[in-house]
Amino acid sequence: MQRLSLLAAVLLPLVAHAESPKVDAEALYQQHCQSCHAPGRLGAQGPALLPESLARLPQKAAVQVIRDGRPATQMPAFAEQLSSTQIDQLAAYLYQPPAEPPHWDKAAIRASHTVFTPRAELPAKPVFKADPLNLFVVVESGNHHINILDGDRFEVITRFPTHYALHGGPKFSPDGRFVFWASRDGWVTQYDLWNLKPVAQIRAGINTRNIASSQDGRYLMVANYLPNSLVVLNAEDLSLNRIIEVKDQQGTPSRVSAVYTAPPRNSFIAALKDVEEIWEIPYDQTDMPLRRIRAGDYLDDFSFDPDYRHLLATSRDSHGGQVIDLDAGKVIKKIPLKGMPHLGSGITWQWQGRPVMATPNIQQGQLSVIALDNWQIIKEIPTEGPGFFLRSHANSPYAWTDVFFGPNQEVVQVIDKANLSVAKTLRPMPGKNAAHVEFDRYGKHVLLSVWDKDGALIIYNADTLEEIKRLPMNKPSGKYNVFNKINYAEGTSH
Ligand code: DHE
Image 1: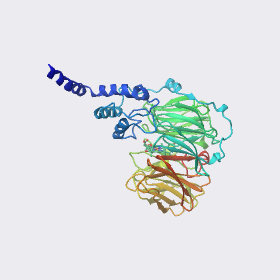
Image 2: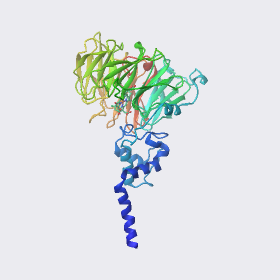
Image 3: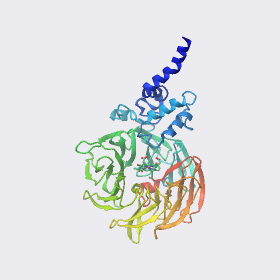
Image 4: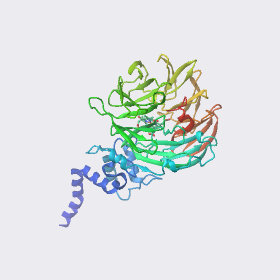
């Protein structure tokens, strides 16, 4: 009898486990995770735990987070409560799509909305001495914080925690006072840079790509993968204005690759990932009538020429680029770009009296320079490996690019914009990934990120290329200068 119960004690859990590992993991989720990450894994205080929102986190890193917790967050360590098999099962479960596709409708969006302090109650005067137009918003991605940095003295004015995993460039109100940012799991936050206070937040989607703010300062558009939607928010308080379901005329739904503002057109332009269309949505008309433009492909990534008449776009699969004339509403040119150009990081300048665009390439070590008057490739500048970001400033003779992938990740290359060649190669912190720069408003200084737990924000003199200051940070990622962003300055991201 005793032997039988011993055997049963050993075998029964194994049998139960073999029969329904999924149910076990689901039960583990409900018991240990649901209170913070919400029923259906949609996210609450903790981030959404769906395959789409975890795409950037390798499964073995998720195992480690469950086991050891995440420093400087509310995420506790479960090593004492769960066996390593249970932790593995739980992690595997999080990477499976849920049985019921997740919903995030009007009611859910509205219920997530919080106004911390109405704009009208916030004094219209900065509470600090620094130049409000030369501030930088610096995202510290290692521990999900933002730093507001004085762009003249390079001192942190304030630092505070954000939602999990912000991604993409923050967008600003036209006067530079309010800044908006989005997390990968759909939280959009508005922050008053003059009062150093959050204004409002809302969750506009489950898996968000990016946001755009209208040039008139009235609206914010949120591009989502999940649900397939574009969500319009009122910039004043982030309240929901409208939801635009994204599908073609036959009803095929699509994720949105990205949305940007085209100021001279008074419109938002969105590229779609699953149907071959570009959408133009004018924000100066109350009903925001949608204009569909046929694209020659599914579009993953795009950028504009300086007057926003043309859009340069790529699809991951087709390789190469295409030019879409937004006025004519059609593809006018294919550009035989090799590898996988990262046009979203493309920047423009005048070269020998002609407008050019340069784009890094996330597959090949090269920068492609394209003439914008005839769409010919003028030069492929070889770099020490595939790059992600590229930046310059109208007052600087240089453009800075990183080597984001491969063995030379520690390298940043400074390109001479006049002779289209590498002027200098920097290794800011040997062995550590250096990437993404932003100039101050005058183009006199460059801020560079070293994406490491023990990384840094490094400030350089933009002319002599000498280091001026180093601020230790935990994986600083993007940084954004108020003046450059609100003026859609040449050389910066829009
Ligand atoms: Fe980004 C901007 C898409 C992976 C850091 N990234 C953007 C934008 C898009 C985009 C559409 C423009 C948003 C804007 O500013 O309005 N990014 C994608 C991808 O499709 C890709 C390749 C895959 C994915 O995971 O979604 C991708 N991006 C990454 C990363 O792995 C990076 C390096 C780290 C991270 O934070 O996830 C990363 N992306 C950034 C940054 C910007 C960005 C820092 C803002 C650049 C800027 O200067 O404006």
